[in-house]
Length: 414
Ligand SMILES: Cc1ncc(COP(=O)(O)O)c(C=O)c1O
Image (cartoon, rainbow, N blue to C red):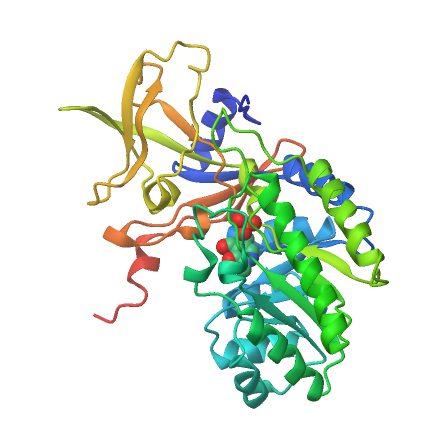
C-alpha cells in the first residue's frame, strides 16, 4: 500500500514556526471518517459500540472526537478513568478493563458507573470488599492452551499471558456472581494485538460465542454482551494489507447467525475496545535531522528519540518514514535513523532505504496515532513532545503542550 500525508512540506514548515519539532500531529478528518467506516461495517449489531482504548491515545481532544462519533472509553487505570470523566464519558460508556487493580481504581470505576471487567476470580472478593458488587459485571477470559489459532507476536501464547481467568475459573466466577444477585453479565477476551490475520480475529468471536452458549446451557446465564477486545492490526509496512472490516464483520455475522441466533440468544451484543485501528494510521511524529554520522554504518540523528515513540525499540516495529520534499527522489541511501538516548536500541529505522538526507531535513514517521506518544517516558531526562491536531478546516491546534524542564524537575525537592 501507499502511505500518504495529510500535509506537505510547506505546511509543516509553517507549523514548525509555532510548534518546534518533535511533535505528534493527528488528522481529525481522517479519524472521524475512519470511525464512521468502523461503525458502518458493524451496523447489523444492535447498540454496536467501540470503547476506544484510552491507553492508545490518551488525549481528551481525541476522546471527545471519538465520543462524538459514538465511541465509549476503555480505561485501565485511575488516570484513564478521570480522562474519560473529564470529557463527559461516564456510566456504561466506560469499560474498565484493568489488571492487578488497586482498590481506589475500582472505587472510581464504580463511582462513574463503569462496566467493570474483572481480570481474576480473586477480584470478586476484592471488589466486594472495596466497593460492593455492581449491577453488571464482565470477566476477562484467558483460553490458555484451548486457543488453537496461532500465537500472536505481541501478546504471545495465552497460557503465558498474565491476563484473565481460566475456563474453569470463568464458570465458577459467573456462578458466584449469580449467587450474589448479579443479573447483567458480559464476557471479554483479548488474545491478539496488532493482528492483521482475519482468521485469528474471527476465531476470537467464535470462541466467545461458544462460551456464551455454554454459559446459557450450564448456568442459565444470558450474557448481555461479548467484548472482542482490541488488537485489530494496521498495516505498518507497505507490503501489508489492513483488515477489511466489512469482510470481518460479515464473517462474524455468519457465525452469530449459526450459533447465537440458532440458540435463541439474539439479545447478545458485540462490542470492541480497539485503539490502534481507530487512531493509529492518523498520527505522525514529525522530527528534524540534527546530525549525520559516518562510522561503520550511516547514521541520521533526529531530534525525536524512543521516548517519543517506543514501538521500534520495544518490538522491532517498522514505522514508515517520509523525508519531506524528497518523496519522489530515489531511495539511494541506507541509513539507521536514531534518537539521542544512551540506548543502542534508540533507533526509528535500521538499514532503511531512503533518499539522500541532509541536516535540517524533516522526517515524518507514520502510524504514530496509537501507542505512540502514549508510551512516552523520561529516561535520560528527555521531555515528552507536544501533540497537535490538524482540524478538518486545515487549522492546527495544540492539544497538549510539550513538557519543559520545570515539569521534569517538579517532583524533585532540592
Ligand atoms: C485490555 C486491552 N484492551 C484494548 C487494548 C487496545 O488494543 P489495540 O490498540 O491494539 O486495539 C489493549 C492494548 O494494549 C488492551 O490491553
